[in-house]
Image (cartoon, rainbow, N blue to C red; front, top):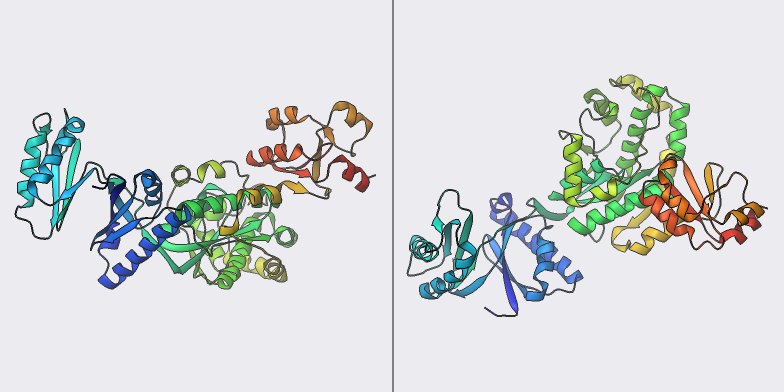
Length: 485
């Protein structure tokens, strides 16, 4: 085998292999294109040779691990193997390579598995027995429960030997005409729900109903970006953010406390239905799990569903919270979701667990329908392929004016603070601020300011990563004093 090239044998997921031929070939073509696209973005060139139930990838030895990382996250891949040795299909040449596995198999219980296609002068059983006899000198044969397996694949005039099969994610490759819109909160549940739809070949866009300002939007966008980059870098995937502040105030003004949570979900579904049609989606996706919170009882879900104009998919419906959290960490979003302060609750005390559909509809009809239209018209629409680290930081760290509901933190020295500070500001040095984050209230919004506006962005970023709604005032103390004399 070419010393500068390595061969990987990639096998399709089980359900992909049993599809009708026409559909199967289309799916395989999409899978190969997806893998090639992701590798091209990493400046990795590969040679692909397709077979009826698998394909081979030949790649530079230096790039093998990068290719493996892509295969690990390519839906449609059942498993794959990195070939240790390659030869012609000549029996003696194959057997001469078997001895190379002797040290690896020594002292273990093993078996040999042979798979052949094409015309050879020997049978699969003959090759298994002769290869097994070579390894049995220092190891023990166990056909039922082997510790190690030597795989030999003979395809026409070539043979491939390897000892490991790596599991792929399974599922189906992405289909660009199958789109859905995920109601994204930034928490564990919605990210897992999005992943589960992506695994079924669905391309997803994300809708964030913003109730917590720019820091919440930034954190949720970051999760959507990571999820998309890791599992399906869809070039047209979008992140839509709607300002839900007026919608929430309208709900509070026109409904009882117990129904507010249900109505909030209704409004989110209504907004998602409209945005889904704009983006060409066939369904909306939520992270709801049955009985996890009061709004997710069967009766409440039925009442909420009546406000949706498209299909509602709930992939997590039968999972418990610990299962969802475990899956979030497995797919790469758990660490980020753990830092997000979920702000979907707009009521204190008990919410209704068995909403009356007619009463829900009565409240719903009393709400200002124009507010959803306004939020959609003024939506922030971001293409995920254009999101980078700089964007995730700069656009979400700064404010240029201070609203009444902000808590102010002056990060200058005590002397500078005593000479002048904004009314209501507390004085904390950057060091004291970072070391005492636990003493601050995550439900409040914070603005930090310093002499030149160069140090507080770092502290604001740390606070945001810890789940706070925190921003740095842009411009420093000079601009601050000119605005608020």
